[in-house]
Length: 392
Image 1 (cartoon, helix red, strand yellow):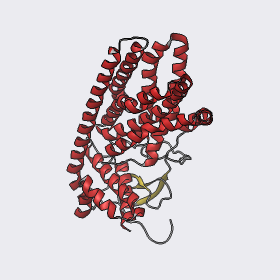
Image 2: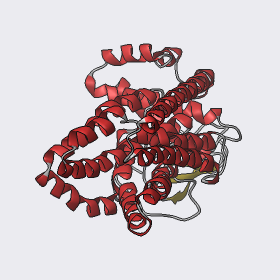
Image 3: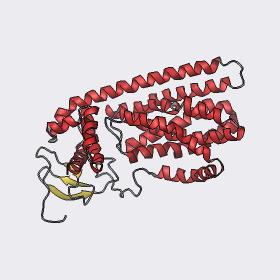
Image 4: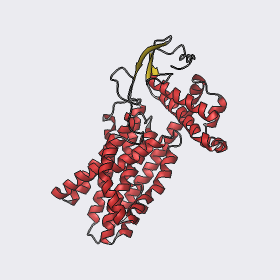
């Protein structure tokens, strides 16, 4: 503790429990219902209330994790060799992101996730997911043939690994509801597709069919992997919002993703070597139907979360001392953008943090059951810090 200022206590009605340390000395400090106690606890991130097992502070930045770091180092030589031999391949593999990223940002605008968390999801898909899938699929290809790898192992192992990336975001308490699950699914799938395209484009370049492969994978079907994995994200997000146990509640999402992925790969395998193009035409029509279905699903989920956000805002504003004028800034996307444009550039990030903190508090109170006081205090601290920063 520095100085003589004693921080104001939480509201009188706050029950005893662990809350973020107002001095920042430790992660949490015990509030006995009347005053701050000397008991402190260090806990890794915000994975849960302290008192179970103290842990060291994180040594890696938010956009990294041990699985991403280790697998990234293993894949780095392959990427370097590709950049030296076929630099055009790396450039072409980035093209789908020009289409995918704006869509993910648009979906995520109600409760924007930190860019470090989005980057971690992208790297998860492009490192650990690709590495494990390549090893398993390569083994199945050598032992059981191309069809078994494409229709059997690839959908199962790829969707499972991408699903683990979403669960990792849940572990970090970055998923508050269905939209968050969908967003992280999209970023993980985008990273996986990007690195997978490097492999496909490299082989296609040697075979002299790079242009055809690029058009088919990057221009016609850039959303293939996100369309499969988004169902896992939806299932996980719904489980979080409804306080259901994970990962069992996410099984139906994994099943849907695997079946869609297997059906698409199976149609491509069946059409190879046939003069009749009806199989691939039917598959393309099915892909369009899945795209439309997924778009409708995402729109309905966003509308439902927006409705919950609007319904919870009066309580959030009154309970946490947010003025009606401030609430009005974030009521609609147009009002928020208009106010954001009038701010100096250095304040816009904190303005976005305020918006995100309000949305997360609204989502927290929209969940059934008792609100976790530690989680609530963490979000209140984020809101307080963000408001003081962008208004200063």
